[in-house]
Image 1 (tube, rainbow, N blue to C red):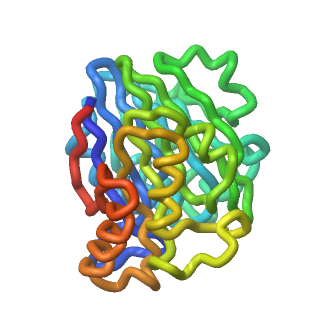
Image 2: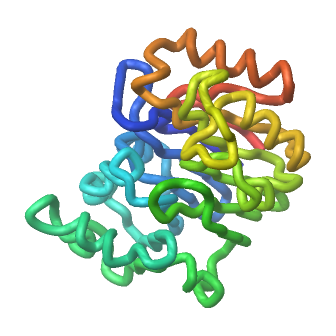
Amino acid sequence: MIVTTLGTNGWFDTENGQTMCTLIRTQNFSIILDAGYGIRRAKSLIDFSKPTYLLISHMHLDHTIGLHTLDYLQFQLPLTIVVPAGQKQAFEELVRPPYTNPWTKMVPDGSKLLDTDELADADLPFEITTLPILHPVPTHGYRLGIEGKTVTYLSDTGYCGNAVKLAGGADLVIAECGALPGTVKGKENAPHMEPEICAQLAIEAEVRQMVLTHFGAGAYTTMSLRKNASDAARSIFPNLTAAVDNMDIVL
């Protein structure tokens, strides 16, 4: 399994990265996590002869702006899209005229739009657990069981009990790091995490590896600031990396 961080910026694109998208490639299928503008890079990486699943954490534009490029990806098989519970209408309102083409016209016939309440009957080829996490709008984190490995995706969120549950014992946690070191006050009420909080979550959840992503574009204006963030976090939890666009993690 290869995990590729296609887009690692929160809020907007800069020279340091495009907005949020992570790709998981396996022998039998691909999973796309969020659809910021980093999603365009998936075209050269996905094996389109195999099924693809697109999991959306929430409907903020830095996680959904790339949805209007779905037809650019040219999926060959029906696509399954998952959004947080109660957000199907919001998805369909966003991905339609006059803003873009209807989502149903950009993907093959038979594609499905599900919310997280419908996953129990979805018959997906991987294990999935999803819980609401801490953000101003409905947002879900995902815990995926794939090929004997566990991958947890937490974006966007502040520190919360459900984030710890989803991360528990995971082989890889992809964690949002929207805030600069030392800037989050009252970690259990904040909408984003800073690197030290991410590292503390990793220790509490006993994860094996953590990758930081979703670096707030207004805060992380240089790549050296990302390095400072990973240095601060590694002093607490050593097996941690700051993501850059197009970085591969092999599990």
